[in-house]
Amino acid sequence: MIKHYFIAAMAAALSLGTASAWAQTAAPTSVSASTPIGAEQGQLIKRGEYLARAGDCVACHTATGGKPFAGGLGIATPIGTVYSSNITPDKTNGIGNYSEQEFDQALRHGIRKDGASLYPAMPYTSYAKVRPADVKALYAYFMNGVKADPAPNRPVDITWPLSMRWPLSIWRKVFAPAVAGDEIVGAGADAQIAQGRYLVEGLAHCGACHTPRGMAMQEKALSDDGAKFLSGGVIDGYLASNLRGDHRDGLGKWSEQEIVDFLKSGRNGHSAAFGGMAEVVSNSTQHFTDADLQAIAKYLKSLAAVNAGVAPLVYDDKVHKALRAGTDQSNGAMTFLNNCAACHRSSGHGYDQTFPSLALSTTVNAENPASLIRIALEGGEMPWTKTAPTQFAMPAFGGRLSDQDMADVLTFVRSSWGNNAPAVTPDMVAKVRKEVSKKTAAAGSAPAAKP
Ligand code: HEC
Ligand code: HEC
Ligand code: HEC
Image (cartoon, rainbow, N blue to C red; front, side, top):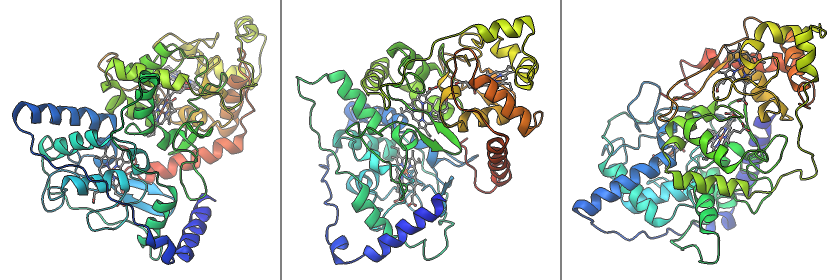
């Protein structure tokens, strides 16, 4: 379905490709050249390393088993697979010959050294927010702090005519925002929230996964000017949940400190990171300074709920009592007791920092059950982090439970302990199961995960 929309949008872009669309080329922002030396240069490279982690460049630019930043990771798009580029300072296959301005053109404008437009699989629409001073530090790091590797770049696996790059320049002109300057946040504004916004909307590109996408795969909002920003998106078959103020399926009931804990350690009293978020935590957010994490948390807490009228869920121990008394003999309840209760407990509360709570959980109560079905089928493992080096794992139940049993247990979970979300049907489970098995089969040729 999405594929058809995308092709339609590309076709529309093709037919739109007239002089007017071509006329306005993005004006290159000049980044002043300089030759810092010694300690100052060392500081700049270190700052660049921190920023590269904040931008999680390594996630996409490293193939499974490949050298850091040497590219070659396959990224699925609706029209085929795009491979990340070698961004090590190798002069032949990497970006060793890129000037700072050419690096900036790729990073923030989506334009390659040869003038071709990049696929938006490279999140340059977010990186457009990066201040020139931070671009400079990133450049210093990639030129001096990264080991050169000669791995050649892989061409895209997209068939002609969709493989033509020029429609991408139209996409870019329509959807990419203007790039940032070095403007300093005004004294009157809340500087902490401004710093959080700068990171979330910019380098950390949280919206690339957490914002829903439109017909041409563009993010429906690139900043908190739009109510769709961070309201939940689907990535790799997982729901990257709503990060706005909603109480039921968003961060409404998380405190700032709980958001900080989750991003730093990969877990908190509500939840533990899994799917793409486990990698984001281990590569990127665990390395943020406490000040930056607090800024991010404060900013996220400033985002209004999508559905402000929805009342918060309240814990109800009716089901807990029924399970303990043995009065609920439904297939959902029995399947839960036999497979899930050992860790998540009959109270649904789990164990703090160890087995996440299913009661009032955002993953469980999200309208879209994608992540819920996915983790129940495939299991998961918490990310390893410096502050929480114990990885607890959830086993995969795909091989053990039929579509019907899975639908029953998940529907049970979605309607117990005060949870309140629509039923999961066997058809929904079958659909996710099919996607998961396709993914596993393709894993050898176009890996979807990082090292
Ligand atoms: C979500 C995945 C993703 C992330 C994160 C990402 N990139 Fe990319 N990047 C890509 C892909 C895919 C391409 C190649 C796109 C194409 O071929 O059109 C690319 C291309 C590039 C290029 C262009 C290289 C060339 O051939 O001219 C540069 C430079 C670059 N990325 C730098 C970065 C930096 C620096 C970061 C971190 C701040 C980063 N990227 C983070 C996916 C990503
Ligand atoms: C590569 C995609 C991706 C990126 C980038 C990403 N996330 Fe996530 N995130 C996910 C997915 C998928 C989930 C759902 C799985 C889970 O709950 O761990 C998630 C879950 C979360 C949760 C838990 C929500 C809940 O209700 O349990 C928080 C908080 C979060 N992300 C914050 C962030 C922030 C802040 C950023 C930017 C710094 C970010 N994410 C960037 C994919 C991503
Ligand atoms: C051996 C212990 C164990 C068992 C048994 C188990 N889980 Fe889990 N579960 C975990 C752990 C650990 C996590 C965190 C995994 C991660 O972060 O990757 C988790 C995470 C989850 C989550 C995501 C919660 C969130 O928002 O972070 C859901 C939903 C879930 N389990 C449902 C189930 C269901 C349904 C069953 C039974 C079919 C089950 N679990 C059985 C240990 C278990």
